Length: 444
Ligand code: GAP
Image (cartoon, rainbow, N blue to C red; front, side):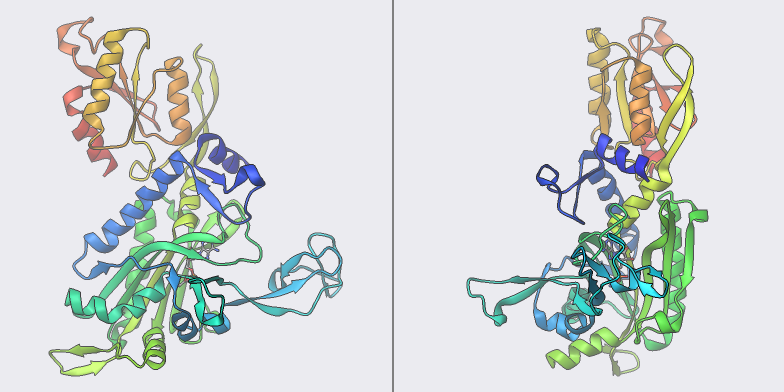
């Protein structure tokens, strides 16, 4: 994990937020490569969840949330972690994560056993709307994206004219005042979720739960996460939310242990019923064929963007050996991202930077590829070193413009380049005009 955290900072995937002021605990900024990786993940999720389907539409709800919404959903009263304070070192700790020694819970910071009684600590961030500071002006930063989907169910149904089963999907920020943010970005206070609320008839719930679990496992495989590091936990009834008739956690084997990436839950009609009760508005569905009116049930695959980015990074990290400038084998760090997820798809290298025709041709190739994929131009240093820099950030393809490209070694190879594959390190000669097609096919 140390190597991964260090690479993330060194190469610009993830930085600690407000770092020059000592950092803000549990909050992270994504650097130039991190934002590309994250965007690729979100775009692919949106493509397969919304755009490729006739039965799902999207929503982009607000972060600031009316307290009544979160009162009805149960978050105001029960979205809590049990917390204790250590009277010796004043640390605030999660009671359920404390180790015991000789039958007594112990502070992990100072070893002290003088701890307060556990009390519930609400994980929501509260803020004040408007100038007055009375209780009526309280708003919350949403702790999940799901609630705006439930609250807008009727509006979306009316405008989209969908028939059950159908879903509403959303990607967006969520905030939780975690007592112990930890394991790099794994447990953060500000994070993003990719959630789908898939509404259905009550009798379809269990089958759709199985269906969505399968779809979601397929998704992780499609973005390049190894199946052998993914695990499915069938959450036992006593650990599920009381309204859930079935929940699966999709877990990933992180270097710090097996941990949840996503929850796929059959939430019955709990959420819509809660909002019907609290708002007094109807959030039901009228079936034109059977003439029945009822409140739909829902199956919810809820994934964390940041956790999936972290899993992508952990899964991609590899070390092998490759020859250096003098042909001596050296350790190579290589991020084996699936080309679909890689932040940069292709690097473009003129063989020498002081040969104007090579540079001009390389810039031409860059302009040709730019509209199709994210490319990176690099003319600095020996070619082997340039390859190594791209391997370390997981760029799957490298194009080198050499003297053959300029036609100096025969007309038949004019306007061809070498296309290098990150994983096999093999190079093939291809025509420049074919590059957009060849690379686009490989990254799709
Ligand atoms: N609407 C259901 C819901 O929010 P959850 O299990 O609390 O369920 C769903 O959260 C996903 O959101 C988790 O599986 C995880 O990927 C992500 N997530 C939750 N808390 C997080 C945190 N503190 N930091 C990063 N990701 C988090």
